[in-house]
Amino acid sequence: MNTLDPAMTRSATALHSPAAERNAAAILAVLRTHLPARGRVLEIASGTGQHALAFASALPDIDWTPTDPSEDARASIAAHAASGPPNLRDPLPLEAADLGTWPPGPLDAVVCINMIHISPWAATEGLMSGAGAVLANPGGLLVLYGPYVEADVPLAPSNAAFDADLKARDPAWGLRDRDTVVGLAKSHGLHLTRRVPMPANNIMLLFRRA
Image (cartoon, rainbow, N blue to C red; front, side, top):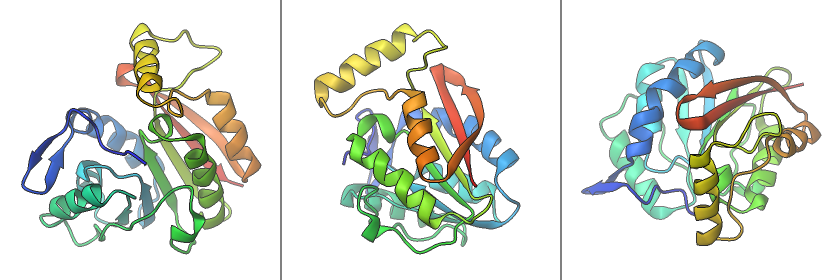
């Protein structure tokens, strides 16, 4: 599964994504509001590792574990983590669709940023199944970030173009229907509690383990 921004640059083994640089502060503001003061967080498809470093540095009482199925991504995460705080753990080789690669719970939160639209639907199915299994019950938090197709919100032209580009690159990719994702989450005991509009026509969806 591809988890790396094609616009990224490389410095030694540390990769840098302009998108991750731009959206980190806005995502962190939401995490600060909804994550517990302390606890265990698992990040799915951490990509370059920039988010993991930024969030673990800003949230010192959160035990932050990044993951990625890509060896290149894990090398980048480890390179960023080398200058990071002690609450930032080593990256795990987790494949969302393979539940055997998930660590045991209970976890306080699972965070997944910009994966659902650049992976096969099986990865989203695995994400929901895995999160439903490892999140603390009740109250464990699943956080999703990215662009979606929403029946009650006009699709921005930039998102429509992005969707077409994704599907041209891989027919299994593309923006997902928000309500379909919400329904899948519900089937695994995860209930949507908040939709947060974000810059650049993205949204955050917050689910709680019932």
